[in-house]
Structure formats: C-alpha cells, structure tokens
Length: 261
Image (cartoon, rainbow, N blue to C red; front, side, top):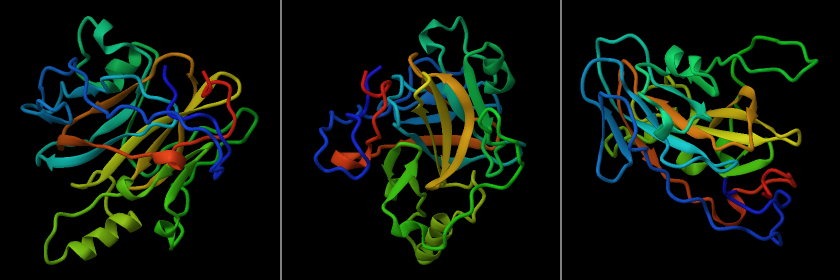
C-alpha cells in the first residue's frame, strides 16, 4: 500500500515528500441500486433505500481522506449515510451486501458507522470509557489552516461543506464552518481515514465538515489494504467525491515505520 508522504516532522519544511496519492474514485463494484457516473466521482442510489454500498477504487494511503459531499436527499426514508473502512477487496466479494450495517460488517474485517456527531470513541487499553459528545469546537476553528489528526496534518478548507452561491450563501457557509447543521445535511462533507500506530495497527477516524470525531475504531490491520466504504443509505440519495490537494506540507506525519513502507 503506497504511503501518501514521506514521514517527516510536523511543520518541518526540510523533510522530503512523496507524490500525492491519486485522485479518489468509486469502485466499479457496488450495490445493485447504485449508479456511478462516467468520471467515477458521483454515486447515486436510483431506487429503494438499500443496496447502496460503495467502495473506493483503490486502497487508501495512511492519512488520506476519502471525502464525500452529500448532493441529494430523498424524503420518506429513516436513516442516513454510513461510512467506514474494509480490509476486504471489493473485487473478491461474491455479492455486494444489501447493507453495510450489519451485513458487510458481519463478514468481518470491516468497520462502518452511521454518521452522527456522537460516535462512541474507543478508549485506549487500560483507559476508562467515558461517553461524551464530540470534541469541543474552538470558536476560531478555521483560523488554523490544517486539521491535525494524530500524526497527520490535513488541509482544512475543502473538508468543510459549502452552500450553492446565492443570496444567503454567506450565512449558510458560516453554519457549515461552525458545524451546527445536522451532519447529514445536504452539502455536508464527510470523510474517513486511518492513522497507523507503532504496534502495526491503525485507528479509523471520521471527519464531519472539518471536525475530527475522534477514533471510531482501533486495531485495524494497517499493513493490509484498507478500502473506504460509503453506504448511500435511506434519506441520502447521491454523493460526490471531493478531492484534496495535500501539497508539500499538508499530508505529513511524525516518524512511523508503517508509513515509511
């Protein structure tokens, strides 16, 4: 699995950088009700509320965000988009499961969550579990141009949803920036990534409009290819991929043996 950058110290302009990861695309293997556009960047569920499971075309690099924007909603269904990672190669599946939860997860080696700001973040071994809301959000959050997730720095600008240009777009954009809209609102941007650890495992993080929800799962096999999972479920009808330009310093990490492979 290719690393997205050479491990260098955060903020160290002298560290070498590898080429950016390729643009993200949806896999040609997907649920029966999904239609992917010719560019491979938009997935739409054309009927029913299920059979909407999609995968990334390629495994993700460490720290690479698979970022989607909710394009269309459909009234009348209960439930929203689901997001996660799988170590299963989509091409090896005999059939794409009807649902990511519980069907895909029950196959093993898959970690998928319904999108909410109140994920049950997984504590480290030996730490007490405390149920709490999402991490507190600083008032001047967008002053910092990078989102820091464990050892990675990720450019924040494109992580945040934007309204379509219009009379009140400046007001709506502030609501996205402050992350006060429902996380599955139209135009919200949702991403998933993994961060390798020294013990050979990885933590999975979900990002909602530029806010890290904390580790949703731990102990993922960092040495195995990990594909993104997007379940275009129920009231979420269509999503499109948003590309990030990591640049020289944007996606970099502290020294880590797994990232250096």
